[in-house]
Length: 296
Image (tube, rainbow, N blue to C red; front, side):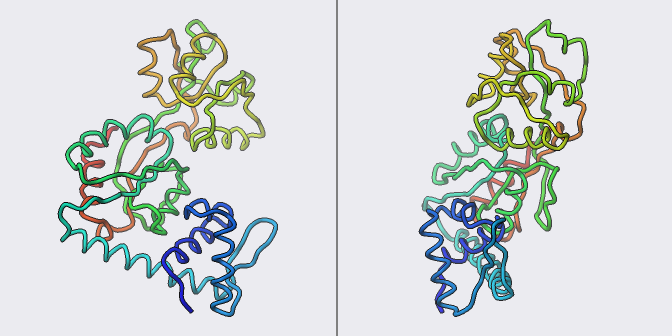
C-alpha cells in the first residue's frame, strides 16, 4: 500500500475533527477529493479505517493504528524540514501560523510587522481558528505555531505567554450600563447586539450564551471591531469586543466600555508549538520574537 503525505495529513485532519467535511477543509481539499482519497486508502489497505455515522466519523482499530503511525511520520518530516532549514540560505519559506480572532486583529499586526521586515525571505500563512482547533492543528502538524487561550487543554504542547485579552461590552456614552464598573453577561442578553460576521471570537461568545440557555439577539453582523464600536456608540445596539479594540476606537467615537464579570471574558493568550526541535530556523526565530515581549 502507498500513502503519500497528503493522505496522512488528510486522515489525521478527519480523525481530529471527527468529520470528513471539516477535515477536508483543514487539509485544503474539496469534499469529493477528500472522500475519494479516503476510499482509495481503505481500498489500498484492504481494511476499513473509519466508521461513518450521523454524528461524524470515528476510527476503526486499523484506523487508530494508522493515525498513530501517521502522527509519527509527520513528526519526523517536520524534524527533517527543521534540520534542512538550518542549512538553507536565500530560500523562501512559509510558516503556518494559526491564531484566534483577538490575536489576529489586535496583537499580531504590530508583532509580525517588525519580524517580517527583518526576514524578507519568510512568508506567513495565517489562519483564524478557535483555540481548541488550534491546539489540535499544532499537535497534528497542520500549523507550526499557534496562539490560543488558556480556556483549552493544550496537552503536551510547549506554551509561552503572549498577551492578555479582555472582552468588554461597548455601548454609547450615557447608556444605563455605564453606571456599573462590571456587568454580568446574563444581564446584557436582553439587549440587541451588533455582532461579528463569523469568526472564532463570535462563535466563542455565542457558545457562552448557549451555555446559559440564551441566544444573542443580533441586529447586524459586521466584519470589524471598529464597525461594531462605531454602531454601538451611535446607539444601534451593544457589542462585545477585545478591550484593545475598544480603547483604540474611543479615540474617535463617543464609546463606553464595561468589563464583563465572567472568567471566560479574560483570556490569557499563549504561543504554542509542538516541540522546538520541530521548527524550521525561521519558525524558531518567529517563535522567539512573538514571545519576547509578552503583554500582561
